[in-house]
Structure formats: structure tokens, C-alpha cells
View 1 (cartoon, rainbow, N blue to C red):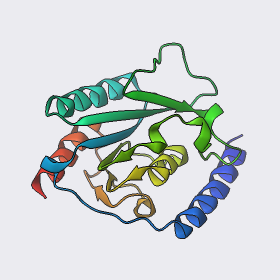
View 2: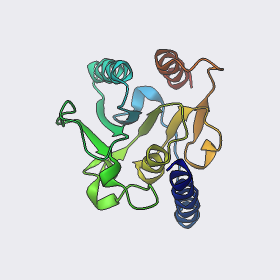
View 3: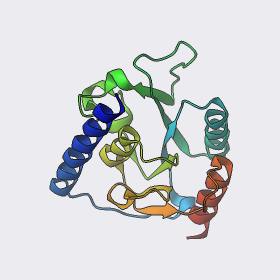
View 4: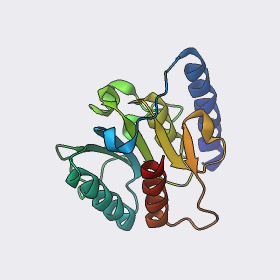
Amino acid sequence: MKLIEDIKNYIGRWQLERELKQKKVKRKRIPFNQVNHIGIVYDAENKENEVLVTQYANEIRAEGKKVFMMGYVNQQQLPPTKKFMLNSEFFWKEKLNGINLPIKGNIGQFLQLEFDLLLNLYFEPVLPMQAMAAYSQAKYRVASNIEGGLDYYDAMIDIGPNKDLSLLIKQIDFYLRAI
């Protein structure tokens, strides 16, 4: 089963890279104090990480910024514990095509929203989340240092071998406010 998933991911990455070469997107880094709309893509499988992402989103909202969250659930169906809210959605395997790329028409409003900034708060090169970042209408994309990630992100933050989401959030926040 893993071999089949690896083949699907390989073909999916190839297809995504082809699409990205044809799509010319102007990137523009906006100073954080001028950012109004922020998108967050995260792995919604881990409850602790989901809580951290939600807390960070609420902190940013308290500064007057609009934040929209998109969580990925690596399951065929969305668990009943995951609830859609006004400013957050989920996508799961049922929303992917045969090569693990999101079906754009099945994702909801996330891909139609124009973000000043997209935060990718995950550590592993999970194709559906990377594709979501690539397909988004974001002007600037920031993520953790993921191998091969420069095709999908404009800036990557390296926090070393420690895969601690709270540290990644602090480092990304520091980077965005410093530049």
C-alpha cells in the first residue's frame, strides 16, 4: 500500500511542478504591520498542534488581521470531531484526486481567497498541503525548512532537528515582524 501511495505522490508532484511552471505568479512580501489577510495551512491530525495553530491565529486576529485556517486530515472521511467554522475549513483524502492533489472545486473558499501572507505550519513534505500552498492566491508564502520546498514557498524557516510547532510559530512570527 505504501508503494502505491509513493507512486501517486511521485506523479502528483510531477503534475504540480508542471502546473507551477505554467503559472506565473508575482510574489510580493508585505511588511507584517501592513498585512491584512493571512491564510494558515496546517496538519489537523495532531490535536495539540491544532490547538497551537488556533491560539496563534487568535493572537493574530487580536491585532486586527483576518485569518483563515485550512487543516488537512489524512483520512478518507472527516472525523465528526472536526467542525467547520466561519474562518476555518478542513480538507481530507476524499477531496483529493487520484494523484493526491486537491480537487480545486471541492476545497471550499480557501483557494479563492487572496492572502497577503500564507503560513504553512507543518514539517513533513505532505503533497496535499504543499499543493494547497502552491494553489493558493497568496502574495507571500512562509513554511518550515522542508526538503524541496522552494517550489512551493517563498521563505523557509529552519529550526534545526527539533520539530516543535510552537518553536516554528515563534520563529516565523519573529521573522515576519523583523523584515
